[in-house]
Length: 363
Image 1 (spheres, rainbow, N blue to C red):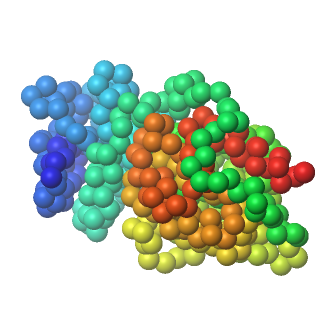
Image 2: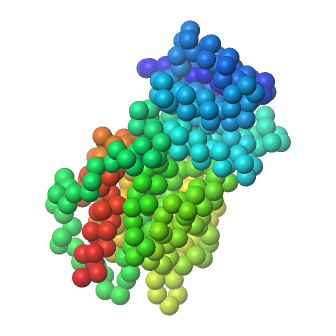
């Protein structure tokens, strides 16, 4: 069993102590040190380089975002950003994800110790997820965009294509996407390359509560689509993309008068996540059936695999991101292993596959 070496960097002594104690309870994690700012951290890292760094944003002498960019330029290493629940904090956290951070966790301004203690299991899971990320694929979204290969039609097909499947008459097409670690950058690449005319899109990106609204707003500025954080009762229309709100599950249901709408509800984690890709995909399988296109992208674990299998069995077309372009080839790998995937595609070809699928259904 490989031990994950973690360095905790935060200017709060309470955060350093609590996070170090929580992480040390897991036998697969060894906290190799804690530092009050990046300058102290760099000194510790010269003696022993960590597998994962947990990093505060606002610190003296050097801020976390500057430190992150330096790490990713000099020696890419998985970084978990610990951001305060403020408007400025969420904005900076999204910048950090774009600059190469693997994950983000939230910390409130009040009741900090209590919050971290209650979130102990989630914190450990996030660090483990980050440790499995390929840090060299955690570059900026701009770098990923520049490195993406041009779209090709002759994509690899690991199962017979869904050419024999026919849409159910009277139902609109819909696209469902699930992703996790590395997904913020991957989604940015996909959405910014889609035209306004594509069918409605529903997305689960594993992300803490309070961050998904800012993430949706960012994507809305970068894409021709109208991107929103989903709300209960939202009608799904072409040219719109909905991000599941952090801390809640999102499902697709039939709308009165035709079409689809979104249901957002409370509930326990499913497949260790809330929102869960499995919850979304299963609802799409039931409601949309063969008119759906399901896409599973980079992320640790198996959330979405069984839901994609249900979509596939319902006649939906299904796509998985390939291992070579995933930050973590976990969720797509599990879906492929279940035989739930029609096509395996590089990240740079997924937007084209969406357009291609929409074109075929419009004929």
